[in-house]
Length: 369
Image (cartoon, one colour):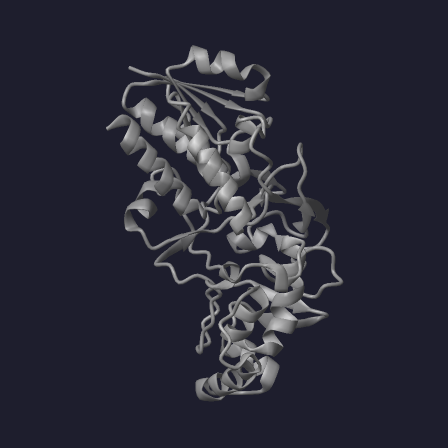
C-alpha cells in the first residue's frame, strides 16, 4: 500500500486517484480552487449544464478510452459543429462545401478544389515557414483572411507570421457538406455535465479530497509526508522558475443569464474578425439540445489574455524556445524521484480530454502495475 498525494483534481489527477484507490492505495487529493474537476467543471444554472472554463466536447477514436469514460456518465450524441461569424457573415466550421459555396458560390468539390489551388499559387513552391503560409497552403487566401487570421492572432496574442506553422496543420478541410468538426469515431457530452465524472472517480473511501488548498503553502512538507506525489500543476512553478518562466496563454470568461430561450442558435460561434475582442461565444444549453428552463439561456464570451504569474494558465506556447526550456525542466524533474509530473501543465503540452485520460493511464501502468 502506497500513500499518494495528488495535486489537482482535474481529469488527469482524478483518473490516477481512481485507479490508485481501486488497487488499495490511500490517496489524498488537494485542489487550490474551491471545487473539484479542474477545467472540465460544469455547474447547473437554470437547468443548464454550464461549462465554467470553456466548451468541452469529448471526442476520441480510441474505443478503450471511450468505454473508460462511459463508466462514469452516460453521453449524449452531441456533434461539434461550430460556426464562424465574420462581421455578421456566417460560415460553417470546419471548412467544407457549405463554407465554399457561401464564400465563392461554387457547388461542386471540383470547383472548390480548383479555387483553393488557384489561391495557393501566391506561395509558389515555397515551403510554409509560419502559420500564415501554412494556412494559405491548406485553404487559400480568402478563407485565411476571413476565418483564420483575426481569430488566431487574438487567440495567441501574436501575428500569424510570427506563429509556428505546426499550430494549424490539423485544420479540418472537407470537400463534402459534413459539418462535424471532428473526425473521431466517438463524440458526445455527458448528460448531466462533467463534474459528476470527477465526483464518481473520487468517491472511494480510500480517497480524501480537500479543496481550497495550495500545494505551495507547504510544498516540502507534502513531499516529505507522502510516499509519492502526482503533480498536475505548472512544472516551472514547482521548481520556483529557477531555469526561467515557461510561457502560457490565459483566458477570461464573461457569463450572463439572458431572458430568451435561444440566443444564437448554436453551442459555439467563433468571432473571426480582429475587431471583436472575444474569440467565441458559447450558449451552453445547445450542448444538451436545448435542455433547460424555458425563456432562459446562459451565454459565455471567451476572451484570450496574456498570462503572467498568478493568472490561470490555459494553453502552453509550444514554440522552440519554450520546448527547449521545458526539456530542461523535465531533466530537472528526474532529480525528484518522489514526484511524477502529469497533465497539460506538468507535461507542458496541449491535451484533449481523451489524451489526458490516456496519459494518466500510462502513469498508472508505470506506477501501479
